[in-house]
Figure 1 (cartoon, each protein chain N blue to C red):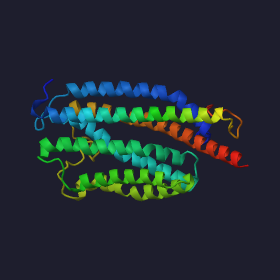
Figure 2 (figure 1 turned 90 degrees about the horizontal axis):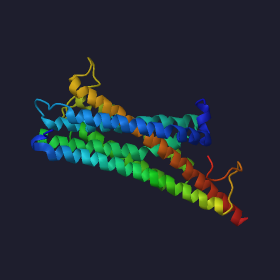
Figure 3 (figure 1 turned 120 degrees about the horizontal axis):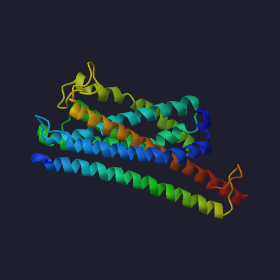
Figure 4 (figure 1 turned 135 degrees about the horizontal axis):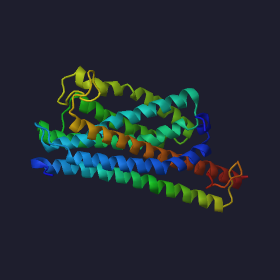
Length: 243
Length: 58
């Protein structure tokens, strides 16, 4: 099956049915291994056991940006190539991305209170991630507000691409401004500054959460394709009844 | 495994992530069931896809 074949929703649904159980199984295994490694990881010399929040906070924070990146590629697919599944992919990803962003914000707050002495600070990193969360909500509202799916798809694609400007702002906010948030310690020049005792569980959890996103995204795309099939059948039914 | 004086923050974080992930899984599973049910109803009412295949067929 080539990539172009996946433009056919029926072929995409058939592939999804085959892939989803394997993806879900791999996700469960990796997350269980990651959780075990996180549980037995040593305490940090400064942060103590609160470092365990990192194993869930960081993957959610990475995914909050990654999902918007996926949606931006899908937006290009909608606007430039008019790929039939591009808007389906973007629309299905938005609530999952919103959930990851919400979790990054809340787990960050819960980590910040004991370490910084505050749940929230209006600094560049936290504020830019909050803006990302609000953009997810706005995009979901836009899809719901516009009844014509093709108009909604184009408007959402433009908004997604405009919103992508926020991604480098989030990434480099800790370098460009003074913030309470620590600078990058994994994806940075010179390699990760984390000890392997923390880095390995973190990477296992990050891959596990990425697989979780892929699983949920494929399942949500399948639902969206079925929803559009329902809509087109309802329109056919209405036109038959009117004739 | 001792979680120290900030155990409540750690446990709340993990519990919240578990709850949201479970809600996402549940929501997607319920949505799938709902769409299949709507397709079955449309199929029962006699509406056919342009391809001639059944509404619930892949």
